[in-house]
Length: 137
Image (cartoon, rainbow, N blue to C red; front, side, top):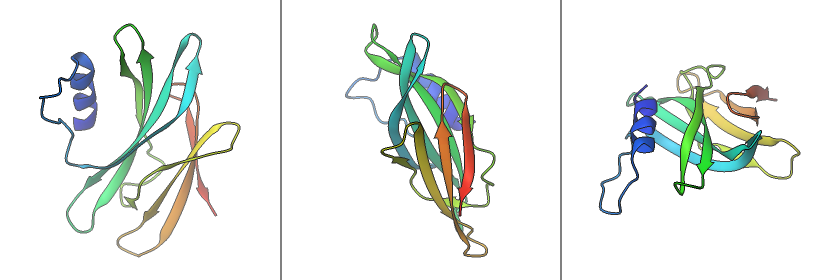
């Protein structure tokens, strides 16, 4: 919830060079890539891993659809979703976009800090609000 509020505040006004960064300290990884098109609107994806706890750290993954606003020379968050398929008990690493696929795909690996079990998930990203997640075997 804090991250969504932060995104709304950042979208509300342009940042100046002298402004201090307003990044939530719980953000552990941010990856930007791929492109989406929805009618005349277009932009790119931002994948954000937010951590919580001290030791062990648990994570959640957020997908943001960033829309380009050429008139204002900036990007706005068009939509944002939490990937609830990946349980909060996982400690996630940095998401990575997969090159060379027809659709936009990304992966994220994680470790269950309680059991040490490792897993990787594949994300297929579509227009704003649309995505699917499946575990890689």
